[in-house]
Image (cartoon, rainbow, N blue to C red; front, side, top):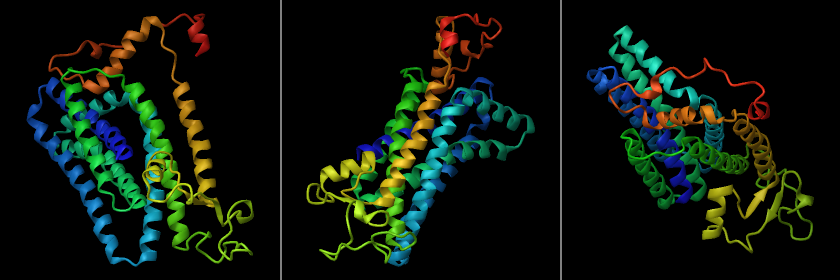
Length: 340
């Protein structure tokens, strides 16, 4: 429940911030008359996400067990790809998101197309909606039909909506950079776990060699699939089912947070380690690559960060809409600049 709560909160807040920026800009330029079109696009995006979730949930019942495992594994791989892309997309474009969205609104208004505003609302929310649906579906599949997982996601989305509204009203201020940095790191770990479970599904379906196929090495003493180094690479890497019972609260927490399962194959472990090593390294480098803020620009950049969350909610032009003080460059000899 906690893991899906954080996912719902993170993805829901992203969508809420985007919608807040669009609504605030249309209000500021005096075009509240097109807000119904924007909300229509947002509603269509939500309907699409719910429709995909319904198709995946109820459509799987018509498939054979092997087909369900294969479908689950492939969709989990797609989920990992989407989550990874969105993590780095947010890390790269968060600082220019507001300007990009407002530019899209300007072009739509200048063309005078009603469907252009609908499309902006749809596209802006559909990305987070589809990603959230696939991620939650993959996690629920790995837990079994756990109502707590869905309840956690709904609570996270509800908190995100309330928090987005408070940010838009200027009633609360949070450091969005820190929030997205921590939740982005959490999503990297979650995606690694989803990848490991995707490998498990594909091995069960026979699409990948593993403990469920003829490629599995057999322990000559017990006659079961081997465990440990002797089972490399298509057997079980470890089996801790005796110490951590599958389905127990501890196993559920570990699987939801770090992707750990009491019994994992070598391919699962290798996939988890490689994903964490590669994606985790690039994610941390992306955080460190951000320029160090000096005292002269700290206030401006902090205001810009808050503007992303608040969406410049007032109808009157906000102070942050003035040009950035790039005309007065910092001295190149500054120790902080050299450090950056």
